[in-house]
Length: 254
Image (cartoon, rainbow, N blue to C red; front, side, top):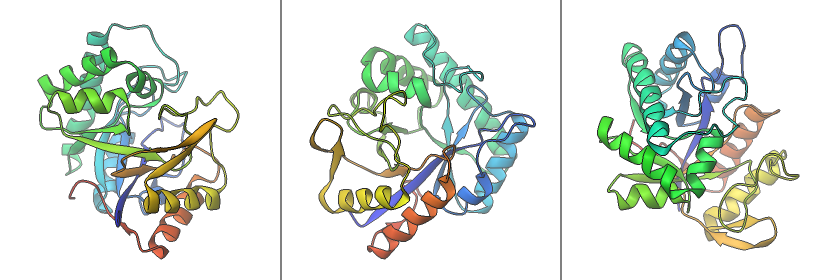
């Protein structure tokens, strides 16, 4: 692997409430997963984020999640799979409309938070999301957590899938992320995160908690924007990868 995409979850402000430093992150990453008004984001935040991303040559993806601002989309809301699919499509449509007003467009879909984790483990939920996206946005690929049910279900349905790993999250032996409620779920050392990625690029294997390293595919690396020191971590990771001879570029052509 000589080239990798860096992505981040952005546009997660709402009204006067801010989350992270989107301007700084958009000068570092090559793909932006923009909140669609479900777990976070509003019309003006979506428009501003899309405009800034386009100005920086950053590819835009929709980042839908549970409609749960109070819980930031990190709580599972009981819903049927087809209801989840319609919720996802509605959010993608909202962002795509605003993106076009901003002179760009949505190029892929990446689920957020609790919904992403549920779809990673539950093929029925993944099928609900994939079926809805095929009906409304058949050309949009999915950016899925590597090795999970969403990746398998989307690929089996003929949807283009790109695989994602996380720079700052710990893994379980089954390839799913360690829940945030558990100790050690988030890596806070930029140097540790960067070295883990450099090793992964060389060997294709990811360390896990409570087991031997596992093999994962990776088209993109996510660096979260809502953790302390996120910008510094993203900048350090980019610098270390470039120094190791790894090119940084979007997994989709801009």
